[in-house]
Image (cartoon, rainbow, N blue to C red; front, top):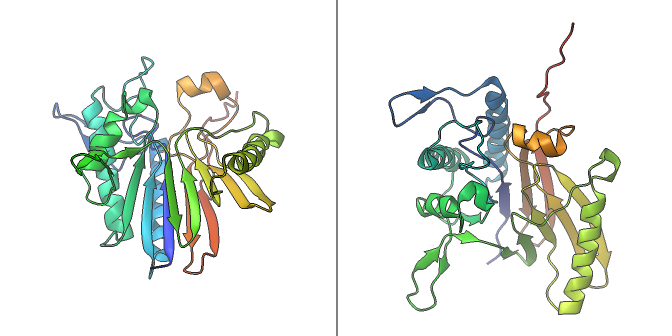
Length: 287
């Protein structure tokens, strides 16, 4: 039965990073504690703004929460920008955030959540952190073993959801962001057109929304329409400021901080909104 549905797509929290998302002071297993930096407080303020919007907008609606990869930072590339050198503490920070989030937005019976597979460097081979994290919550929908009919995996490499007749194609990897301000959308426009034509070639159903993450930039392709239908593509923002490792690849670009939200009405009419922060990561040195 059709029901007005709100889809919240949160990605790249990188909890456990000293530049990732964290909810207040975190008590470490050795008895010490970690206090969020001023930058992390900016990220959390933006996250709260997103939750406030979801809580207000989801009234009289079903809520579907998509955790679209890399909820944890993990231990990788010899990074020193970590809250802790323990992966299980990264997972606990992420779990605390999800627990807080689900309570605040009023997750209830009938609401659903999905966890997509992120990057191995962050979640471990086979998205182990994502699997452990999702398994802790009743809302996350697992994949089932055909033989035992029991859950055997809590992450999805590619998630295809059809809601009120509207198909969404969601995954962590696969988007494109141009390296210049005036070309940032070009790659996504070309990807969307290519996917449209590939869908015709493969005789598969064309998704209305094609959503990817991983690049920490918000990019919207615009609408591509043809006789086969219409498709829009997105790369979602993140909840991590640029790390020292990321500066080596795109030091001139700020990370986009925020969340993509899609609404689908009972009749299939759909809309989208991206809530993002304005901030300055690098301070000007006046001499």
